[in-house]
Amino acid sequence: MQDQRKPTPRLFGALRQHFPRTHAVTAGAASFALALTMFVSTPEVEAKRLSLPVNLSTMDEMNAAAAGVQQQRPEETAEPKLRSQSLKVQNGDTLSDLFQRAGVSATEMYQLLSSGKEAKQLARLTPGEEFTFHTDGDGALQSLELHRDRLNLVAFTRDEADAFTYALHQREADSYTAYREAEIDSSLFVAGSNAGLSQSLIMEMAEVFSSDIDFALDIRKGDRFNVMYEEKFLDGEKIGNGPIQAVSFTNQGKTFSAVRYVDSNGDANYYTPDGKSMRKAFIRTPVDIGRISSHFNPRRLHPIFKTRRPHNGTDYAAPRGTPVYAAGDGRVIKAGYSKSNGNYVFVQHGERYVTRYLHLNKRKVKSGQRVKQRQVIGTVGSTGYATGPHLHYEFLVNGHHRNPATIVRKLPKAKSIPESEMARFRSQTQPLLAKLENYEQPALAQRSEDNDNNSVN
Ligand SMILES: [Zn+2]
Image (cartoon, rainbow, N blue to C red; front, top):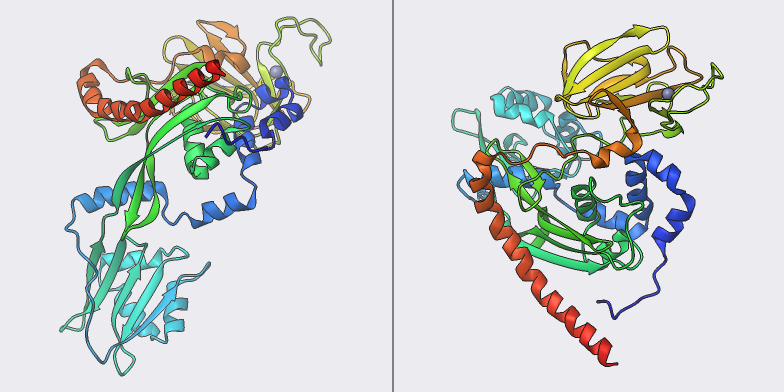
């Protein structure tokens, strides 16, 4: 794969020129999202995204559901006098639109809807789903099938008592493990696409490592990744991808590995091979859109008072009303108003950390309330001593102000696997990591051969 050096554009090079380091760091999470979206605007990627038929999370749910359900193919109703008509749900369609198009009376629709609680789901339609109406010679509805997707079929059939009975037919996709690897020449996106990864899998991979690697700034030519994930097939045709199972990423010579684990509470997360969470305890910036308008600076000249006053936080300029998130799980220790702070919220995280959010337009939480990471605690405003709408954000460690723009990467990650669950964690993740390593071996051998050849030449 390294031999085929196609002249691909240096996307990251171009990006780095447009985003000087200070700006990119300041934009934080936004820069990460931006970096990825800048690569995904090519038409073939759009096409790929649109052609992915099944959304990943629903695939998981379906498999979980299917595991407990007898596998069954939809039954054919072989009544000779029945007439069948299939209609696709279009954007904005309601159930009555579809009944009208099928020429089935509204009276029958109401009869069906009042047939039981299962019929309620007919009110929730998604474009692309397909209805099949089976009507008799008089045009009366005998059965209605809703093909939710290729794996799920809901059927309502008229019985002898003239009532509709409900049945759910589910199929289970075949899962296979897929493995891809690539070395980055121009960008993660180009390398991932060339290796056959979908856009969403590339995003997923970037998200797994987002607290260790800044994908807008840190990626270098020669970085590489190895990723193992599930592919779902139905009747021999690929219908979607399952989640990433194990992945490793070498960035500037340093290798990070992660494995997916469903904990005893049923929550799926990514961990290092020794059970440390890949998730950050704190998000990098408490606003999604915004740019740093004033840096953390202990010796700053204050814009209003024109005296040397420390700037103990980072200011993010953002439009009034922009949501402000809690940087991490914690408890609101103060939420109120003061002449200088305006509307403010202080959040305590564990024993050591406090985050402060000032000049809010509105407060969305109260003192004493528990908050989750990324929960909206207020909106950007200009209350108190503020020259314009911005969030003044402070980060304190053991009571001392630290630079919010740089502290996050130095902090410990979210909760790791507790000792009591380590045995379970190991028994589930070690086979995956061993499998990933097995896949990697031939590649390593190949590379060392390449090196040998190079040294001979
Ligand atoms: Zn400030």
